Length: 420
Ligand SMILES: Cc1cc2nc3c(=O)[nH]c(=O)nc-3n(C[C@H](O)[C@H](O)[C@H](O)COP(=O)(O)OP(=O)(O)OC[C@H]3O[C@@H](n4cnc5c(N)ncnc54)[C@H](O)[C@@H]3O)c2cc1C
Image 1 (tube, helix red, strand yellow):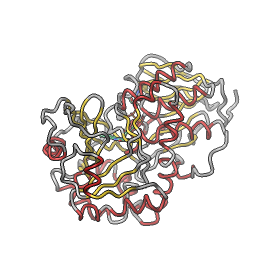
Image 2: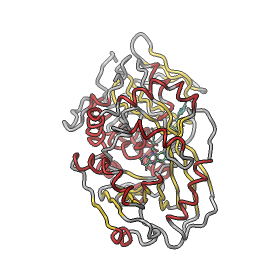
Image 3: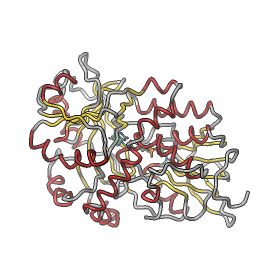
Image 4: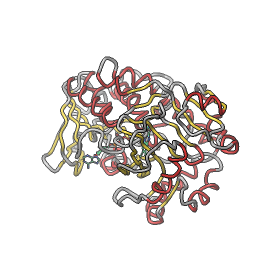
């Protein structure tokens, strides 16, 4: 094969990473007739895709927004606040933080909102298409995505998010106190307002969902290998060699889907993306008899309480402290009383605590596109707070783009380009 920019059915494709993004891509490419192999050092859905809130949420709000830089100092000193930045990480990732501040201008935020919604607005249908007729369907619930506000001030302060959604034409229902009660009678009656995005989906067990997608990909011929990727090199003919702790792979094509760990692999393929690990946490509780039916995001505390199939999950927090530091459960522990406030029938014993690395870009947009160094490489990572949401639509875009099948004109692909 020459250095053909068009990926063609029948070629071998090596996918690096078996999270939500890698596994949905594996299924989409296997269905298109590629010989797919997925490498991961652990099993499918064990990274950030393991412990998230399960929301498949049409979002139009990039994290970087006008006014945010002025709010950051207040967030940092609040011990239960949503944000912490380790000083060493601030220095190490200074270019990322500077770019984040630039993305806070009104014009950049609006452009990022459009590009984000172009993908996330189609996320739920893409998921349904991908898993239609497979056992994975039983893990998705059509219950929407609920945000609740415990004060009128909180509701007013978060108007920009609703404005972004409205400008994109996203369906949004504003709920009164009574309507929140009717929708979720097992939430404490402390919420004065709610916002429901009726087209959101809920994965009741994100890891099982990713595993089910991997199983379906295997049924379509994909192979999964448990190896640790050590290095990537590009040969003079553009072919990529992937060295692992076990062997060397020389496939026709390579796709990088290693989430927050993708940066050094992307560098080997000609791009130095601004990508950092934005760590998030969860705590698991036993499921009370009277439970909610959908995730509820308590806006004032930036925390989500999710009725997973295996228990109630509290997810929270943005913590910038790199890829290798161990977890710090201090802030998570401080939010546990808030979980009891939200759902008083919850047993306060925490069964399990977890930390995961969100792959964060300064503009909240994923990195999707052909590798600069060789058309045999493709980037599909950097899905921020929405990797579960965006994985199926990203897989669809990747297939259309790489096989040159023709992209939907609604997808502003240059917004996700690797060199930006
Ligand atoms: C607390 C929390 C709540 C969240 N809630 C939501 C939500 O409700 N909805 C939503 O859409 N998103 C949510 N997210 C974000 C979402 O979980 C991530 O964006 C998503 O999981 C990223 O998927 P991924 O496949 O890119 O990465 P990962 O799931 O992290 O997968 C990357 C894989 O690469 C493998 N890997 C890395 N390096 C190597 C190596 N050297 N060798 C071999 N394998 C390697 C890892 O083992 C891992 O399996 C949340 C995240 C957190 C932390």
